[in-house]
Length: 253
Image 1 (cartoon, one colour):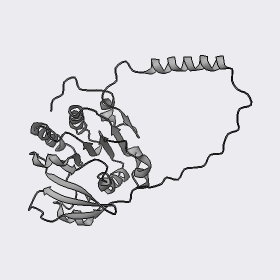
Image 2 (cartoon, one colour; image 1 turned 90 degrees about the vertical axis):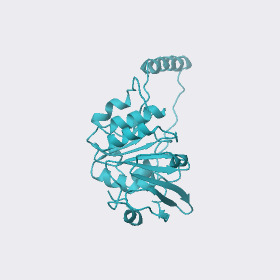
Image 3 (cartoon, one colour; image 1 turned 90 degrees about the horizontal axis):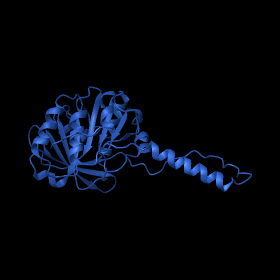
Image 4 (spheres, helix red, strand yellow; image 1 turned 45 degrees about the vertical axis):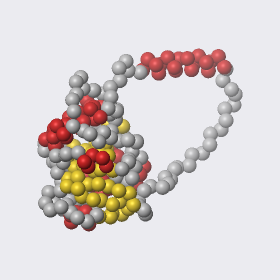
């Protein structure tokens, strides 16, 4: 699948992001523009009405920025998983969905066990789209079955340096510098006419009774045992719905 960057497409086998395999993107820290590297792919997939899953992002995705870049939010699903073991389990389970266009996940632990990565690589072979995993730079010294490994380093003026550590074919000796899609700096908000002040203040006792009733109602609505996963921004994939409220009884990896 085309990356949206001609210079990168020329250096990747198949002239784009590989599908049905694990791709590792190594970053020094979150927020260097790593997700903007995937904006062209996300825009293309969402235009095809294919679902995009963001699993365990380190910070909430900024929906107005994604929409401004042409990503259809109704095709976007976000799942939060706090523990790395839960995150890897959720990735493996999500790859069973045939409606998944792309899966993007973040794993902060640099020492993920090789057998866990091999399971993900095998699960990715059953998925038609690409699987991206953002990992710390230290992970470059760990063995990995990923078919593609790229180190990402931030550069001035909205640019990103890419050093391909591993790919199918000859080793790439040079470093690529790409200009990322521009970050959204400002959002235009619709103005709303101010409302007139109330004619009279409510009775204090009525307000207190309403607040007590509201607090009791909210407390009763809280689930007795919340799972490790939650989702937002869009409707969940039909076959992934259970991941939003289910945690594994016993997970390994």
